[in-house]
Image (cartoon, rainbow, N blue to C red; front, side, top):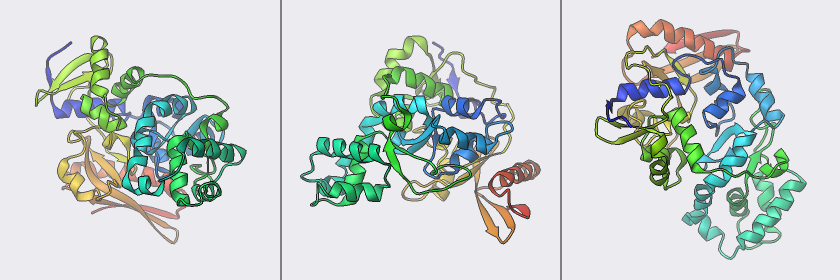
Length: 365
Protein backbone atom coordinates (compact mmCIF):
# COMPACT_ATOMS: atom_id res chain seq x y z
CA UNK A 1 0.00 0.00 0.00
CA UNK A 2 1.09 3.57 -0.72
CA UNK A 3 -0.43 6.62 0.88
CA UNK A 4 0.80 9.38 -1.45
CA UNK A 5 -1.85 11.74 -2.78
CA UNK A 6 -2.45 11.57 -6.54
CA UNK A 7 -3.74 14.77 -8.13
CA UNK A 8 -6.18 15.07 -11.03
CA UNK A 9 -3.50 15.61 -13.65
CA UNK A 10 -1.63 12.46 -12.58
CA UNK A 11 -4.88 10.49 -12.73
CA UNK A 12 -5.49 11.96 -16.17
CA UNK A 13 -2.16 10.79 -17.53
CA UNK A 14 -2.61 7.34 -16.01
CA UNK A 15 -6.06 7.06 -17.59
CA UNK A 16 -4.82 8.21 -21.01
CA UNK A 17 -1.91 5.78 -20.95
CA UNK A 18 -4.17 2.83 -20.14
CA UNK A 19 -6.75 3.93 -22.67
CA UNK A 20 -4.03 3.96 -25.37
CA UNK A 21 -4.56 7.70 -25.87
CA UNK A 22 -1.11 9.02 -24.97
CA UNK A 23 0.39 7.20 -27.92
CA UNK A 24 -1.18 4.85 -30.39
CA UNK A 25 -0.71 1.19 -29.55
CA UNK A 26 0.53 -1.67 -31.77
CA UNK A 27 -2.12 -3.97 -30.26
CA UNK A 28 -4.45 -5.79 -32.63
CA UNK A 29 -8.08 -4.61 -32.63
CA UNK A 30 -9.18 -7.76 -30.78
CA UNK A 31 -6.51 -7.39 -28.09
CA UNK A 32 -7.35 -3.71 -27.72
CA UNK A 33 -11.07 -4.41 -27.33
CA UNK A 34 -10.27 -6.94 -24.60
CA UNK A 35 -7.79 -4.64 -22.85
CA UNK A 36 -10.41 -1.87 -22.76
CA UNK A 37 -13.07 -4.33 -21.48
CA UNK A 38 -15.19 -3.48 -24.50
CA UNK A 39 -16.15 -0.35 -26.39
CA UNK A 40 -19.38 1.58 -25.97
CA UNK A 41 -21.29 0.96 -29.18
CA UNK A 42 -24.81 2.41 -29.29
CA UNK A 43 -23.82 4.07 -32.57
CA UNK A 44 -22.60 1.34 -34.94
CA UNK A 45 -19.49 3.21 -36.13
CA UNK A 46 -18.36 4.59 -32.78
CA UNK A 47 -16.02 1.65 -32.05
CA UNK A 48 -14.18 2.32 -35.31
CA UNK A 49 -13.44 5.92 -34.33
CA UNK A 50 -12.49 4.78 -30.83
CA UNK A 51 -9.91 2.31 -32.15
CA UNK A 52 -8.61 4.65 -34.87
CA UNK A 53 -7.68 7.11 -32.13
CA UNK A 54 -5.95 4.39 -30.10
CA UNK A 55 -4.19 2.05 -32.54
CA UNK A 56 -1.42 2.34 -35.08
CA UNK A 57 -2.32 1.71 -38.72
CA UNK A 58 -5.92 0.83 -37.83
CA UNK A 59 -7.88 -0.79 -40.66
CA UNK A 60 -11.63 -0.62 -40.00
CA UNK A 61 -12.21 -3.73 -42.10
CA UNK A 62 -10.19 -5.74 -39.58
CA UNK A 63 -12.68 -4.89 -36.83
CA UNK A 64 -15.55 -5.46 -39.22
CA UNK A 65 -14.27 -8.95 -40.00
CA UNK A 66 -14.08 -9.72 -36.28
CA UNK A 67 -17.81 -9.05 -36.06
CA UNK A 68 -18.60 -11.00 -39.22
CA UNK A 69 -16.63 -14.03 -38.02
CA UNK A 70 -18.18 -13.92 -34.53
CA UNK A 71 -14.94 -13.11 -32.68
CA UNK A 72 -16.55 -9.93 -31.38
CA UNK A 73 -20.22 -9.17 -30.72
CA UNK A 74 -22.52 -6.28 -29.85
CA UNK A 75 -24.44 -6.94 -26.63
CA UNK A 76 -25.98 -5.05 -23.67
CA UNK A 77 -23.56 -5.21 -20.74
CA UNK A 78 -22.20 -2.47 -18.46
CA UNK A 79 -24.77 0.21 -17.64
CA UNK A 80 -27.19 -1.92 -19.68
CA UNK A 81 -25.80 -0.26 -22.80
CA UNK A 82 -24.62 -1.83 -26.04
CA UNK A 83 -20.93 -2.69 -26.00
CA UNK A 84 -18.70 -4.24 -28.60
CA UNK A 85 -16.72 -6.95 -26.82
CA UNK A 86 -14.82 -10.11 -27.65
CA UNK A 87 -16.86 -13.28 -27.85
CA UNK A 88 -15.12 -14.55 -24.71
CA UNK A 89 -15.97 -11.40 -22.78
CA UNK A 90 -19.60 -11.44 -23.89
CA UNK A 91 -20.02 -14.88 -22.33
CA UNK A 92 -18.17 -13.88 -19.15
CA UNK A 93 -19.59 -10.40 -18.57
CA UNK A 94 -23.25 -10.98 -19.34
CA UNK A 95 -24.00 -13.03 -16.19
CA UNK A 96 -22.17 -10.44 -14.06
CA UNK A 97 -24.11 -7.51 -15.54
CA UNK A 98 -27.46 -9.30 -15.34
CA UNK A 99 -28.59 -7.28 -12.26
CA UNK A 100 -28.46 -3.91 -14.03
CA UNK A 101 -30.00 -5.27 -17.23
CA UNK A 102 -32.84 -6.86 -15.26
CA UNK A 103 -33.33 -3.71 -13.18
CA UNK A 104 -34.71 -1.99 -16.26
CA UNK A 105 -37.83 -4.14 -16.01
CA UNK A 106 -38.66 -2.55 -12.64
CA UNK A 107 -38.98 0.91 -14.22
CA UNK A 108 -42.63 2.06 -14.26
CA UNK A 109 -42.70 2.15 -18.07
CA UNK A 110 -41.95 -1.56 -18.36
CA UNK A 111 -43.43 -2.81 -15.08
CA UNK A 112 -46.89 -1.52 -16.05
CA UNK A 113 -46.64 -2.94 -19.56
CA UNK A 114 -45.63 -6.40 -18.33
CA UNK A 115 -48.35 -6.96 -15.73
CA UNK A 116 -49.54 -10.56 -15.88
CA UNK A 117 -46.58 -11.83 -17.93
CA UNK A 118 -44.86 -15.01 -16.78
CA UNK A 119 -41.28 -13.88 -17.40
CA UNK A 120 -39.84 -17.38 -17.20
CA UNK A 121 -42.23 -18.55 -19.89
CA UNK A 122 -41.48 -15.47 -21.98
CA UNK A 123 -37.75 -16.20 -21.81
CA UNK A 124 -38.24 -19.77 -22.99
CA UNK A 125 -40.44 -18.68 -25.89
CA UNK A 126 -38.14 -15.82 -26.90
CA UNK A 127 -35.16 -18.16 -26.94
CA UNK A 128 -37.02 -20.64 -29.17
CA UNK A 129 -38.05 -17.87 -31.57
CA UNK A 130 -34.64 -16.21 -31.81
CA UNK A 131 -32.63 -19.41 -32.07
CA UNK A 132 -34.85 -20.59 -34.90
CA UNK A 133 -34.23 -17.30 -36.73
CA UNK A 134 -32.87 -13.88 -35.71
CA UNK A 135 -35.57 -11.22 -35.34
CA UNK A 136 -35.72 -7.46 -35.04
CA UNK A 137 -37.10 -6.26 -31.69
CA UNK A 138 -40.34 -5.27 -33.42
CA UNK A 139 -40.85 -8.68 -34.99
CA UNK A 140 -39.84 -10.46 -31.79
CA UNK A 141 -42.45 -8.49 -29.87
CA UNK A 142 -45.13 -9.36 -32.43
CA UNK A 143 -44.20 -13.04 -32.28
CA UNK A 144 -44.39 -13.04 -28.48
CA UNK A 145 -47.73 -11.24 -28.52
CA UNK A 146 -49.31 -14.40 -29.93
CA UNK A 147 -48.79 -15.89 -26.45
CA UNK A 148 -49.23 -12.64 -24.49
CA UNK A 149 -51.95 -10.78 -26.46
CA UNK A 150 -52.81 -8.43 -23.61
CA UNK A 151 -49.35 -6.91 -23.41
CA UNK A 152 -47.57 -4.37 -25.56
CA UNK A 153 -45.25 -6.07 -28.10
CA UNK A 154 -42.46 -3.53 -27.48
CA UNK A 155 -42.49 -4.37 -23.76
CA UNK A 156 -42.37 -8.10 -24.49
CA UNK A 157 -39.30 -7.59 -26.69
CA UNK A 158 -37.65 -5.40 -24.07
CA UNK A 159 -38.24 -8.07 -21.44
CA UNK A 160 -36.55 -10.62 -23.69
CA UNK A 161 -33.54 -8.30 -23.99
CA UNK A 162 -33.24 -8.27 -20.20
CA UNK A 163 -33.92 -11.93 -19.61
CA UNK A 164 -31.66 -13.33 -22.32
CA UNK A 165 -28.10 -12.55 -23.48
CA UNK A 166 -29.03 -11.17 -26.88
CA UNK A 167 -26.45 -10.17 -29.47
CA UNK A 168 -26.97 -7.94 -32.48
CA UNK A 169 -26.05 -9.94 -35.56
CA UNK A 170 -24.36 -8.54 -38.69
CA UNK A 171 -24.70 -6.67 -40.94
CA UNK A 172 -25.48 -4.38 -37.96
CA UNK A 173 -22.18 -2.85 -36.89
CA UNK A 174 -20.13 -3.77 -39.96
CA UNK A 175 -17.91 -1.09 -41.49
CA UNK A 176 -18.86 -2.05 -45.03
CA UNK A 177 -22.49 -2.91 -44.33
CA UNK A 178 -25.55 -1.73 -42.47
CA UNK A 179 -28.73 -3.21 -41.15
CA UNK A 180 -31.49 -2.98 -38.60
CA UNK A 181 -30.94 -4.29 -35.09
CA UNK A 182 -31.51 -8.05 -35.40
CA UNK A 183 -31.17 -10.35 -32.42
CA UNK A 184 -30.36 -13.90 -31.43
CA UNK A 185 -28.94 -15.42 -28.25
CA UNK A 186 -25.22 -15.24 -27.51
CA UNK A 187 -25.08 -18.98 -26.86
CA UNK A 188 -26.64 -19.77 -30.24
CA UNK A 189 -24.54 -17.23 -32.17
CA UNK A 190 -21.25 -18.24 -30.56
CA UNK A 191 -21.95 -21.95 -30.15
CA UNK A 192 -20.91 -21.91 -26.48
CA UNK A 193 -22.65 -21.51 -23.11
CA UNK A 194 -22.29 -18.51 -20.86
CA UNK A 195 -19.10 -18.67 -18.80
CA UNK A 196 -18.30 -18.29 -15.14
CA UNK A 197 -16.37 -15.35 -13.78
CA UNK A 198 -16.32 -13.01 -10.80
CA UNK A 199 -16.17 -9.28 -10.28
CA UNK A 200 -12.80 -9.86 -8.60
CA UNK A 201 -11.19 -10.69 -11.94
CA UNK A 202 -13.14 -8.10 -13.90
CA UNK A 203 -12.40 -5.22 -11.52
CA UNK A 204 -8.68 -5.88 -11.83
CA UNK A 205 -9.14 -5.48 -15.59
CA UNK A 206 -11.21 -2.32 -15.04
CA UNK A 207 -8.40 -0.80 -12.98
CA UNK A 208 -5.83 -1.77 -15.62
CA UNK A 209 -7.87 0.13 -18.22
CA UNK A 210 -9.42 2.97 -16.17
CA UNK A 211 -7.49 3.31 -12.90
CA UNK A 212 -6.54 4.53 -10.45
CA UNK A 213 -10.19 4.58 -9.43
CA UNK A 214 -12.50 4.71 -6.43
CA UNK A 215 -15.15 2.13 -5.58
CA UNK A 216 -17.74 4.71 -6.72
CA UNK A 217 -15.97 4.91 -10.09
CA UNK A 218 -16.26 1.15 -10.52
CA UNK A 219 -19.99 1.35 -9.77
CA UNK A 220 -20.39 4.17 -12.31
CA UNK A 221 -18.65 2.04 -14.95
CA UNK A 222 -20.78 -1.06 -14.46
CA UNK A 223 -23.86 0.35 -12.67
CA UNK A 224 -23.75 -2.76 -10.47
CA UNK A 225 -23.59 -2.16 -6.69
CA UNK A 226 -21.27 -3.85 -4.23
CA UNK A 227 -17.94 -2.85 -5.78
CA UNK A 228 -16.58 -1.55 -2.45
CA UNK A 229 -16.84 -5.06 -0.98
CA UNK A 230 -15.05 -6.54 -3.98
CA UNK A 231 -12.24 -3.98 -3.77
CA UNK A 232 -11.87 -4.59 -0.05
CA UNK A 233 -11.45 -8.28 -0.82
CA UNK A 234 -8.82 -7.43 -3.45
CA UNK A 235 -7.05 -4.87 -1.27
CA UNK A 236 -4.03 -7.09 -0.41
CA UNK A 237 -3.10 -7.44 -4.08
CA UNK A 238 -3.77 -3.81 -5.09
CA UNK A 239 -1.95 -0.53 -4.69
CA UNK A 240 -4.06 1.88 -2.63
CA UNK A 241 -3.53 5.61 -3.16
CA UNK A 242 -5.61 8.66 -2.29
CA UNK A 243 -6.68 11.75 -4.19
CA UNK A 244 -6.53 15.40 -3.09
CA UNK A 245 -9.83 14.95 -1.20
CA UNK A 246 -8.55 11.93 0.70
CA UNK A 247 -10.63 9.38 -1.22
CA UNK A 248 -9.12 5.92 -1.67
CA UNK A 249 -7.91 5.13 -5.16
CA UNK A 250 -7.36 1.48 -6.03
CA UNK A 251 -4.88 0.45 -8.67
CA UNK A 252 -3.05 -2.45 -10.26
CA UNK A 253 0.55 -2.40 -9.00
CA UNK A 254 2.28 -2.65 -12.38
CA UNK A 255 -0.10 -0.41 -14.36
CA UNK A 256 1.45 2.72 -15.93
CA UNK A 257 1.25 6.03 -14.06
CA UNK A 258 3.20 8.51 -16.20
CA UNK A 259 4.35 11.83 -14.73
CA UNK A 260 1.84 14.69 -14.80
CA UNK A 261 4.19 16.51 -17.19
CA UNK A 262 3.84 13.83 -19.89
CA UNK A 263 2.65 15.45 -23.16
CA UNK A 264 -0.84 14.42 -24.31
CA UNK A 265 -1.53 14.85 -28.04
CA UNK A 266 -4.99 15.84 -29.31
CA UNK A 267 -7.33 12.89 -29.70
CA UNK A 268 -10.82 12.64 -31.17
CA UNK A 269 -13.27 10.43 -29.25
CA UNK A 270 -16.58 9.12 -30.60
CA UNK A 271 -19.93 9.76 -28.98
CA UNK A 272 -20.35 7.88 -25.67
CA UNK A 273 -16.68 6.91 -25.44
CA UNK A 274 -16.13 4.88 -22.28
CA UNK A 275 -13.23 7.07 -21.18
CA UNK A 276 -15.84 9.77 -20.43
CA UNK A 277 -18.48 7.51 -18.84
CA UNK A 278 -16.60 5.17 -16.54
CA UNK A 279 -15.98 7.26 -13.41
CA UNK A 280 -18.28 8.81 -10.84
CA UNK A 281 -16.00 11.86 -10.76
CA UNK A 282 -14.92 12.60 -14.33
CA UNK A 283 -13.41 16.01 -13.69
CA UNK A 284 -9.86 14.76 -14.34
CA UNK A 285 -10.76 14.23 -18.01
CA UNK A 286 -14.15 15.91 -18.55
CA UNK A 287 -14.47 19.30 -16.78
CA UNK A 288 -17.88 19.68 -15.17
CA UNK A 289 -18.57 22.99 -16.96
CA UNK A 290 -17.93 21.33 -20.32
CA UNK A 291 -20.16 18.37 -19.47
CA UNK A 292 -23.00 20.79 -18.75
CA UNK A 293 -22.37 22.55 -22.06
CA UNK A 294 -22.63 19.52 -24.34
CA UNK A 295 -24.32 16.65 -22.48
CA UNK A 296 -28.07 16.47 -23.11
CA UNK A 297 -30.72 15.85 -20.46
CA UNK A 298 -30.85 12.13 -21.35
CA UNK A 299 -27.08 11.77 -21.01
CA UNK A 300 -26.12 11.87 -24.68
CA UNK A 301 -22.45 12.77 -25.14
CA UNK A 302 -21.38 13.83 -28.68
CA UNK A 303 -18.00 13.24 -30.25
CA UNK A 304 -15.38 15.10 -28.24
CA UNK A 305 -11.83 16.35 -28.68
CA UNK A 306 -9.21 15.90 -25.98
CA UNK A 307 -6.60 18.68 -25.78
CA UNK A 308 -3.82 18.24 -23.24
CA UNK A 309 -5.76 15.21 -22.05
CA UNK A 310 -9.05 16.96 -21.25
CA UNK A 311 -12.28 17.50 -23.18
CA UNK A 312 -11.95 20.87 -24.90
CA UNK A 313 -14.39 20.68 -27.83
CA UNK A 314 -17.21 18.79 -29.49
CA UNK A 315 -17.06 17.68 -33.11
CA UNK A 316 -19.20 16.48 -35.98
CA UNK A 317 -18.67 15.63 -39.66
CA UNK A 318 -20.74 17.61 -42.16
CA UNK A 319 -21.19 16.43 -45.76
CA UNK A 320 -22.17 18.60 -48.69
CA UNK A 321 -21.92 16.99 -52.10
CA UNK A 322 -18.43 15.54 -52.37
CA UNK A 323 -17.02 17.76 -49.59
CA UNK A 324 -16.56 16.72 -45.97
CA UNK A 325 -15.91 19.16 -43.13
CA UNK A 326 -14.91 18.25 -39.59
CA UNK A 327 -16.48 21.05 -37.58
CA UNK A 328 -15.00 21.50 -34.10
CA UNK A 329 -16.82 23.61 -31.51
CA UNK A 330 -14.50 24.85 -28.79
CA UNK A 331 -15.82 24.72 -25.24
CA UNK A 332 -13.01 27.02 -24.12
CA UNK A 333 -10.30 28.79 -26.08
CA UNK A 334 -7.83 26.19 -27.32
CA UNK A 335 -4.23 27.50 -27.42
CA UNK A 336 -3.08 28.33 -30.95
CA UNK A 337 -0.02 26.18 -30.34
CA UNK A 338 -2.37 23.15 -30.50
CA UNK A 339 -4.16 24.11 -33.74
CA UNK A 340 -1.78 22.51 -36.24
CA UNK A 341 -1.75 19.19 -34.38
CA UNK A 342 -5.56 19.26 -34.11
CA UNK A 343 -5.89 19.93 -37.83
CA UNK A 344 -3.52 17.07 -38.70
CA UNK A 345 -5.38 14.69 -36.38
CA UNK A 346 -8.72 15.90 -37.77
CA UNK A 347 -7.69 15.28 -41.37
CA UNK A 348 -6.71 11.77 -40.34
CA UNK A 349 -10.13 11.26 -38.79
CA UNK A 350 -11.77 12.44 -42.01
CA UNK A 351 -9.70 9.93 -43.97
CA UNK A 352 -11.47 7.28 -41.87
CA UNK A 353 -15.00 8.69 -41.71
CA UNK A 354 -15.16 10.39 -45.12
CA UNK A 355 -12.75 8.39 -47.26
CA UNK A 356 -14.97 8.90 -50.31
CA UNK A 357 -15.00 12.72 -50.04
CA UNK A 358 -13.51 14.72 -52.89
CA UNK A 359 -12.32 17.39 -50.47
CA UNK A 360 -11.80 17.42 -46.72
CA UNK A 361 -11.37 20.31 -44.33
CA UNK A 362 -11.13 20.91 -40.57
CA UNK A 363 -12.84 24.00 -39.14
CA UNK A 364 -12.09 25.03 -35.55
CA UNK A 365 -14.67 27.52 -34.30
